[in-house]
Amino acid sequence: MVSTNTHTPHVVDKSPLTKLLKQNSIALEKYNALENQLIEDVKMVIEKRDTIELGRLIKRNHKLLFDELPSIFPPEIEIIQTEAEKLVDVLGFRTTGCGFGGNTITLIKESAIQFYKNICPNHL
Image (cartoon, rainbow, N blue to C red):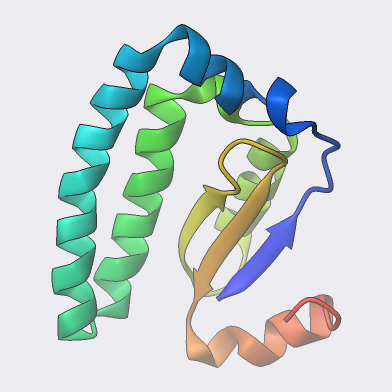
């Protein structure tokens, strides 16, 4: 797993997610219902130790988040996602950080660990 941070400056009470919580609870309810099913799928995949399917579910979760709550994404996330999709042995990519600043996780194959250590030695 590779983690990135865009270092996007943020203030919690002014974050896009905080604004969304105040303005559009229906969008969050819809997202939460969809994500709950996805979490159940992830649990089964983890029990089966199927990292390929886990990567697909992580990608699906990112897409769901982007489709349902696009306003919480800082623009840097698109750049990181585009670059992650080009890299060797990426299984899945997902934004994290609750819309407060642009953190990501990327699931990679074990065979790619040395590659990532070479390109980002301080971050793996």
